[in-house]
Length: 431
Ligand SMILES: CC(=O)SCCNC(=O)CCNC(=O)[C@H](O)C(C)(C)COP(=O)(O)OP(=O)(O)OC[C@H]1O[C@@H](n2cnc3c(N)ncnc32)[C@H](O)[C@@H]1OP(=O)(O)O
Image 1 (cartoon, helix red, strand yellow):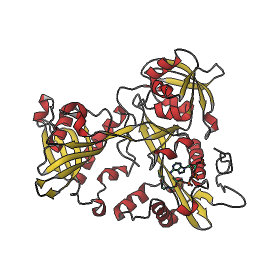
Image 2 (spheres, rainbow, N blue to C red):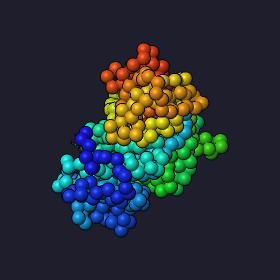
Image 3 (cartoon, rainbow, N blue to C red):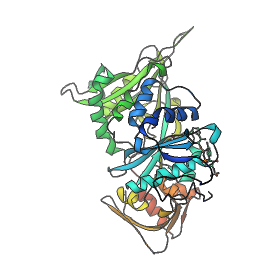
Image 4 (cartoon, rainbow, N blue to C red):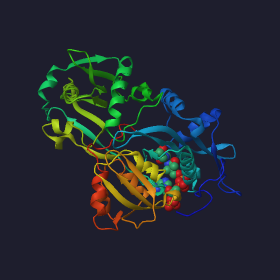
């Protein structure tokens, strides 16, 4: 990447990329939402957002973290950061700049505007003391250059329910299922979700207002589906909530009969019985043929409940792209599956304050990561650190691809073991 006024670390609060020409990148004012959002929609092809979706993103976008690239008075580029908190290995929940709403008008592409917006967002994130920045990508090829590595993956499932059976644990038969209004059950579902977050790296602690996201169900976006439905799994004795599933049904008929689809939005459960009971329910809805779930963890227990995982058409997709904004703080924020003591030689071309040697010492109880003059033991870029950070991809796998270099024999296996986790990291939804 070439070093120019767009990419150089920012020194003042306002940044005009070039004195002679080029749009100015600045924080949008609260009353500039309409043209700002219109530019974002246009960058994505120009289709309208539903009024409900528009209102939700208006409310979630943080004006002081929303940037515009202005050509005169016209907004030609957009990007925003959301103040999120992400679960990391060990169960802590760590501040993360959630980079979102990125778009540059077709008239202004490939002139470095995205680069200028990224520069500004990461400088700002550093000033705020956030250890991490993360995003979900329209196209994965865009963000590696800015130091983001693929930290979580998800699978999309399309289960032909008549050809796949479930073998639930015996106690799931006694779970009580109850259809409820999704809005009325939302508070109880959110409570269960909150308890799940620290258990799986990559999940986001719901910030105020974000509880509206899983309920968003505009008529304009239903595309032939029913309104969102919610089923609760409860303990029949105590009434305790064991889990919930939210889904919609898309009815379809042809000459041979009903061929509907169950479109699953989310399924969360506190125990295996509740989880199996919910999936048994979803796979037993009359007049449907297929159960589709767009985002499940790669180690979803469902894969071990079904009679034939091959028929579930699991497709591996990308989830959260992550980059340490501050390598030391990020590596200290998580815990390690095995004791580790390693000197990492890190290159970070976009955020050069991270470049250099770091000694990481840690275990399941805590970690320190400090600058050192000691000789390097593993060499990698910040992108590989982002990829391995949540434990979804091993350092050994990255080394096999030539992306991590072992400088001291033995360092790779030990560090790789320490970085892995018991559960696959997963980001349930994009943002
Ligand atoms: C987190 C999110 O919100 S994801 C959503 C991203 N937005 C979209 O996909 C909407 C449609 N696309 C766009 O608006 C624009 O094309 C953007 C935002 C992707 C890129 O904006 P630009 O201002 O053209 O990017 P910029 O000129 O800074 O390019 C920086 C580098 O990224 C590369 N790049 C830009 N877009 C892409 C792409 N889609 N795929 C691969 N590389 C890309 C450029 O070639 C350039 O490479 P270089 O540094 O080697 O020269």
